Image (cartoon, rainbow, N blue to C red; front, side):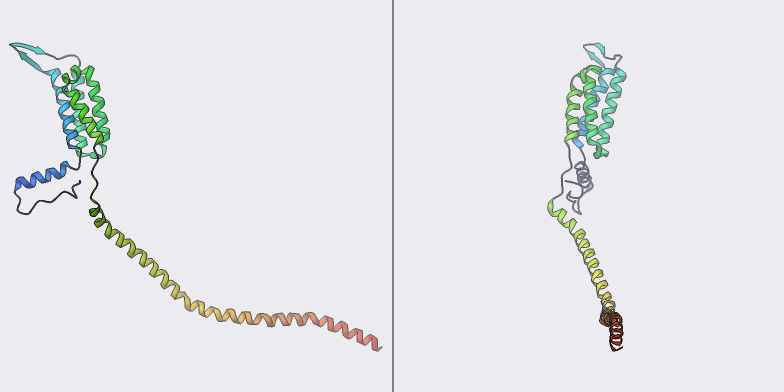
Length: 216
């Protein structure tokens, strides 16, 4: 479901209802839960290397030389989660990045925040990679595609009408050209007869000379 197919709230709805429905429409168009789990998974990785735990009056400090690495990993996981929220197109890249950072946190950040950040990071990265927007109902797509189809049919009809008009406009020119062609065809036999007469004349002259020789 997308924001276009999310049900609209009634006119008499209160402020809380409008905010809740608007947030639900926003949440359905992006990998919300994958990003949320990934961001929460980055918090233990970021926190434990700098934490000071007190047990029975004894303060334990887990700060190590890998504290800077844990800080970078946790912040990057949170940044990737927010990027997947506001740019769902790059959700696969963000999911792969969260998974890789979570695996790196095993040796760098106290076994991935004592396993808490490790488990949450792997689940969140998988959800980011597997999320996909739902398709709209067929009825919605058909109603949205109807105006486009009507415009296409109207354009095709206009092109066909223009072609018919052009052919009709050329008909008088073709009709005017036909008598000229017929007259030219009528002149062709006369020209052929004249050429035949010119060819026969030398034969007649030779016959006349032979008759004159016989008479002598």
